[in-house]
Image 1 (cartoon, one colour):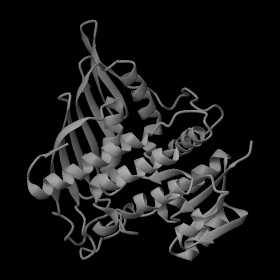
Image 2 (cartoon, helix red, strand yellow; image 1 turned 90 degrees about the vertical axis):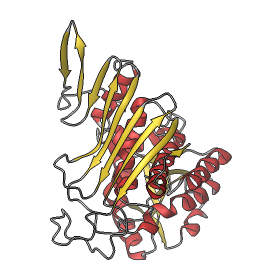
Image 3 (spheres, one colour; image 1 turned 60 degrees about the vertical axis):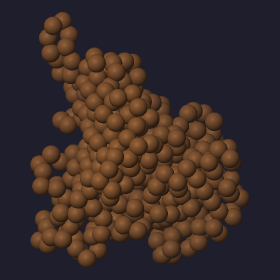
Image 4 (cartoon, helix red, strand yellow; image 1 turned 30 degrees about the vertical axis):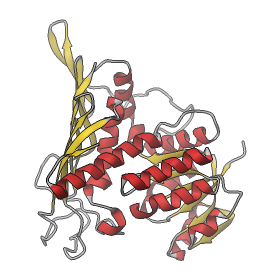
Length: 358
């Protein structure tokens, strides 16, 4: 089968750590163009992942002029997600954009509108949906095992794991800290499980309590307090139109032993589930309480026959199959837009001290 021709915009950590190796592993993508404002990064990516005749650029607009490119990966800081994605869609490319969708709802809406106007596939890289435990729990939710899910927790808590490289600590470039970086994954998982994308209002608190400290014990070395301009933790309380409640917890630095990232807790009318000690499903059967812990070390359903079980590779296959007209997207841009709406509302509520209504 002829491979899709891909361009990669942003050749930093997420491109090298996830997107490029995963795309290569599918065997369905030829990476023919690489763009980064630091040309050496683009050249390095070309050498490791590109075709022999792959081109390199420092200006993404030049890359998008190549009409032979079918798909584009947007792996840049959050602020430029919308601008680059819209330009790529308008240039006739299908796009996988790294999470979060955009720094605010307005920018995310521009991306969705461009995808529709150009009839192109747009997806956002929420790879945690493709974990074995996530896919198992999603099937249980779809089959009604939990009943109506009316209370949930979305948890993305790190005790001391502040990313000290790149622009993670730069509020202008990123739009925020742990809430928009890792809280976004936990919220996406939770909304997806609930299949509920109609928020009513949100209340939020944002903290800058630990980012001025030194001798931090941080996993990636001490941060520079002068550069740590984003929050170190943020929390949200979200009420949905149907009355369901979601509590969102996120931190890069918090004095807590509850370290857990991209995890959800769900409480339904028939059963509950959480990911706080592996996947656990709880309920009552024959008058007795039970806890079910599926074994993910054993084989499971082959969602894509003969392929890797790595979440990032399954994510690529979902995108590629949608581009080829062979399947539906797992992560739809309309869903990612709601995640951005809620995150923006939590930040806004924290600033004003008031609930934000949708």
